Amino acid sequence: MSASKIVSLLLLLVLINISSNDINGVNAFHKVIKKMQSKSTSLEVVSHLHRTGFHFQPPRHWINDPNGPMVYKGVYHLFYQYNPKGAVWGNIVWAHSVSNDLINWEALEPAIYPSKWFDINGTWSGSATNVPGKGPVILYTGITENHTQIQNYAIPQDLSDPYLKKWIKPDDNPIVRPDHGENGSAFRDPTTAWFNKKDGYWRMLVGSKNKRRGIAYMYKSRDFKKWVKTRRPVHTRKATGMWECPDFFPVSIGKKTGLDTSYDGPNTKHVLKVSLDLTRYEYYTLGTYDTKKDRYKPDGTSPDGWDGLRLDYGNFYASKTFFDETKNRRILWGWANESDSAVEDTLKGWAGVQLIPRTVLLHSSGKQLVFWPIEEIESLRGKNVQMNNQKIEMGQRFEVQGITPAQVDVDVTFNVGSLDKAETFDASFATKPLDLCNLKGSNVTGGVGPFGLITLATSDLQEYTPVFFRVFKDATTNKPKVLMCSDAKPSTLKGDTGTDSTEKMYKPSFAGFVDVDLADGKISLRSLIDHSVVESFGAKGKTVITSRVYPTKAVGENAHLFVFNNGSQPVTVESLNAWNMQKPEKMNQGAK
Image (cartoon, rainbow, N blue to C red):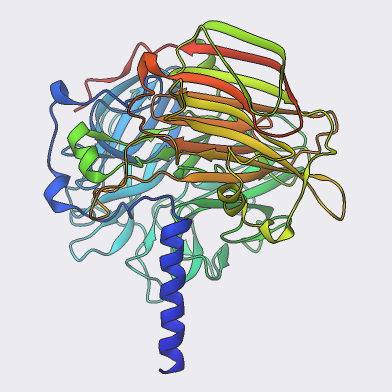
């Protein structure tokens, strides 16, 4: 066998291993399932068994990427990829919903849909930028007649309308085409643009790849119509594959406020986030943006690649941030696909949710971002129950009673006490939290932990989704190493009985390390539980994990919520607050 064939075979084996172990179990959503993509479901027969109560979703059919969230004339806008004809990917339009509070949403007509030669085969992801003197401008990827990916723009028909109901795609599109050095089948998802006051140019990024090198190309323009590629990409990285849905924005050092995307002042870092087409997860780096050279350089405090920091270590993809000038904050939207099969999605009539919007801040260490659900979500809180100073011995669990655990917001602070019994950390797992979580699950007794929450459970734990911590100690420094896991493997009695990838259910565990010193012995966990979604925020948002689950028995009033400890070291629930979560008054009624 030739050397080139051996290399090709090894690469194939690596990709097979990725697909079976690390990918979020989501088929590449640009894959068309022709027999299903236009199989519509009437509202009368949509299944509500696992539909969420307080997350963003249309009444039926498929959704994916949140596109161009923005605020205009005091109204929040969310554009998102939507199939108006079925519950799998295909027939994609830019759906459009508006809100006054990010909680209640009204669906409008799609903002853009395939209709012209420059997007006749698809109106794919992009962003929105509010351009002074011009108003909002949508930048999006169009798929041409020969299936080339190009970048286009759209503008509102009436700038006086705060709801921006009608959009126009001018005939002078496209604004950016792939040149001879760019891959026309991997050239998409333009970012929100930013303005450099010093040279008078707008800039944006477009995701791409060259073989297996991920690339963020940069383009600049004075008039937002004629765009020219800069001499070099803003950043690239080998062996990362296609960079989808790039996001590039500044964060403040030392302040608890967000920054406008065009901010170019002191005491800032920049964030470059990319969505990895090969692995179906995202990673980000923190670094410095040189506005003169148009180059981004990561700080080097975290890996620049597949082992990098993540916005969310679970079912979370194609995320997009925007600056909310009404409250001086940066907000993150992210999409969670279904983990059940395409067949199941078609039968139930819907697929995909947008997760609860999260604020984004730079941690005081300067080494990572922290995320927290927007404060508006607390307006949906209802009945509250509490648990305080509850000691949990090894093997014990205590039920959180008096609430509806299938639709709840729970916030708990644990105190682990002494770390003397913490297991020694095996350094070979330093970049492999998922492997460690799979090896040492919620039922594997440890020293300090596992402890945490058992969500969406039956009373006898035939079905349950544990979200938990396990504390190790570094053999060299004696410092704690904290693992956080969300494990869907025991979440449902439903098995993997399908014969192909359109029929199988995916029940993964997800994991990440939490950078805390435990000097006071305390660590917090907040989980937003919503029927088939479990969003969990460890240590006030340092590590976030989202799981999608589909219990057959632990549903509705039959679901239970517990705190537990399976470590030999007793753990104390210092405080626990749990609230029933109400449904928003409006959630996209009228959507087609």
